[in-house]
Every structure is written in structure tokens, then in C-alpha cells.
Image (cartoon, rainbow over all chains, first blue to last red):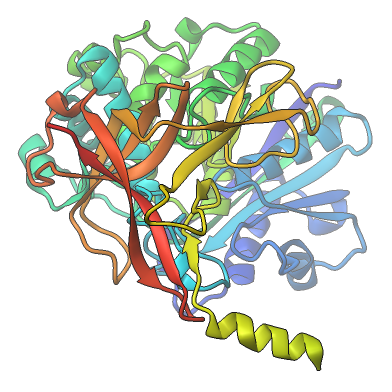
Length: 383
Length: 151
């Protein structure tokens, strides 16, 4: 496999865009990344588009019909919440394999006020929808139980989960790209409306619209266009291995652990060498378990890790900053855009372009995404 | 024509249908008990809810023994759902219930106060009762396993 660099990145701030369709949002992100790379659409040899809710809508082709219909190969990718990061990985593989020298990955989603995900009964008789009788398969409940399992195993407290939300909302105040930039003290998080115990409103990510894009190049091409290439040191994708309770109880831990192990090996970089982590905090309970899954702390130590403020920005006393963007909890989670946006955030830090939230001297970052069903991606980027 | 007549007769005859495919409701229900069942892989012993074509653990194809699963189990983990779809009564307790056969069921738990979730709920014993929950579009009774806390 060849070395691959990220040369251009861009994102459209996550939010609600009633006056723009998803192709427009994706096109703005794509053009932004091309400009950032200093190239035009005619230089792009392959485009990979990630979009979940319009997965059958040929979003990738609609993007090139908007910004430059060159006849290039276009691939549409859907992989639950890991849709964007899977699109990035496919673009990475297209270049790493030697098949192409310049690839464009675009992640986009328009959710509006879609609300709860995961409980669709399909087109059948609603009398057979098991939701609310056979427990829950909606995302808030699923990820609540992920945290409750950690409570059962290690005595983790509701306050410890809530502190994750306090941290990420605090971080968001410095990120102009975040959908919400509201600081939420601990009492405010704990006293907010309960969604699925123990996650209150501020411990759940919002729905929204948005897009993000990245231009990837071979090493040779990258050196032509930038003096600051950001290297893809690891790109990993896993699905669920068989475990006893899965899929009755979704298991977000095992495939993340597999991916982390593979990614650290591929990169030759250990968790203690990371300057920043953007991980999949769709709910506060999820972030906490991933501290252990990504080996940022030891087994059963995630509660103590947040108590000590370890995952805060270094300017706020943290040691391994997690989700300095504000995470999904504040930055937002337009499904297909999320995975690319995580990578964009890390690239900005590694290039010292992250403004007020810049992690000083950041050299290595890890982006983690998980989509239920399940798909887990981990990318390690270095400068 | 013959086929059409048969279909109409089927509709007239109200049936009892399970909410989930791993619930078996005998014709004689409720006198004859309904039960949940699984499939155990003959090659590696992995157990799955309901019927299976192949084994996700070892890949064996169509090599399963049907296992009748216990009515009783223990709460592994739970949550309390406060926000859900319209038409679903909330708050309610959703749980993962471990059965003695080494498999789990996802289900509501009844008999605890959803407004007072507590870690003492871990491990609580529950027992299944199969009850009619609603009627489908064709007028059939839909039945489901409901788990009640024992003691």
C-alpha cells in the first residue's frame, strides 16, 4: 500500500438548513476541500460520497453534476453512522492501492428534525412493531444500556457520565463549527429532561444537516500541492465479531477494541502518543466506554479518567484531549457527514489551523466512528 | 377462484400470532403454554433466538437443534425510556434479560417503578407471561412475552 496524504479539507457547519438541499451542502463542502487543496474538480480521479438517508439517491453523482461532471468514477457509500468515515476510507484505499492519485471524499446528510433513530417498523403492519414491548431498539436506549453495563461492571456513576457532556459542551464554546455552543454545568446536565436513563437531553447528540469533505493524494502528488501534508497513518474498518448477547444487546465495545488494536499496529503509534482524539460520543455513555476501548485508560478506569479531567483540552488541564470540537454532543451528528468532519477537525489541528481551540503542537490524532449494525472505523492521522 | 375463497376463509378465522418470530404459540394456547425458543449450533454450541439458517460463530449451515428456552431469567442491564414514538407509553423499563441457557432477550420489565431506577435492579429475577397486546390489521390477536419481576 502507498502512503496517502490529506491535502484539502472543508466542512459546512452542522445545523438546520431549510433553504438548501443535501446536494448543495455536499457541493459546498466539496468545493471548499478542492480550494483548500489548490486543485479543481477536473483534477479529481474518483469521488466517494457518504450519505445514509439518501443512500439510494445517487448523491455522489448529483454532486459532480453540480460542481463538474467529468465522467469520473463515483461511488456511493452507506454504513450507518460510520458512513462518512467509510467513504473517507474507500477514497484512501483508492489512492493507497495505486489505482488513483487524487480522490475526493464527501460526507453529507440532511436530517432536519428527524428525531429518534432506529425504531422504524418498515412498511409492515405496525401491530408487529416490537418497540416498547420487547424493550427498545432506539438509539437513546441502546446507548444508555451500553453505559449501564459499565455501571454494572465497574460502579460507574451517573455524575461521571454527565461529566462527559459537561466537557464536550465546554469544548464546543471555542468551536465556531459546532451546531450548539452552550456551556452546560453539571447540575444543568443532571437536571435536564431525561431521555433514556441515565442520559438526559444534554447527554444526547442532536440531529441536523451538514457536510464535510477531504481531498486525498498519493505522496508524490501531495508534495506538488502542499508543504504540509497530513498523513493517513492508519485506516481500519471492522464489523461485529460474534459475541454472546449481540444482537439482542448491541455491542459497541468489541469491534471498537478490534479496530483500535489494528489501528495502533498499522500506525506504529500507541495511545500514549496521541495529541487528540475525536471519538463517537453520540451519547455521553458511549464516550465513556470508548476511553477504555481505545486504550486511553485502563480497564474499568474510565470513570476516574473523566473525574480527573484527563480528556479535557490541554489548556483546560487535560492530558489526552477528547472531542475538543465539542463532539457529536455539541458539534452535531448529520450521519453521513460526521465521519469526514472528525477527520477535518484533526487535520485542522495538525496544521495549526484550529483557531481558539488549537491543541498546541498537535502531531498525531485519532478519529473513531461507530455505526450500529455495526461498523467501526478508526483513522490515525499524523503530520 | 378457489385460492381466493381460501384466503377469505383464513381472514374470517381469527388467529393468534406472535409479536416476535422466536415466540411459539401452540394452537391450544392459552391452555397450552406458549414459549420462546432458540437454535443451538450442532458444531460449536452457539445459541441463537428463533430459527437460523447458518451459525454466525462458526459458519455451519443448517445444523441446529431447537432449544426451548426458560420462562425465567435475570436482568442483565436496563434503561428507562422517557422519550419514544407517539403511541408508546412512557416511561417504561427496557432491559436485557439473561436466560439460564446462555442467551439473552430484549424486553420490557414490569413490576418496578420506572421513576426510581436503581442499580439494585441488576440481577433481579423475572418471569415471562405471554399476553395478548393488540390486534393486527387483519383482526388477528398479537401476543407477546412480557417479563414481570418475581417476588
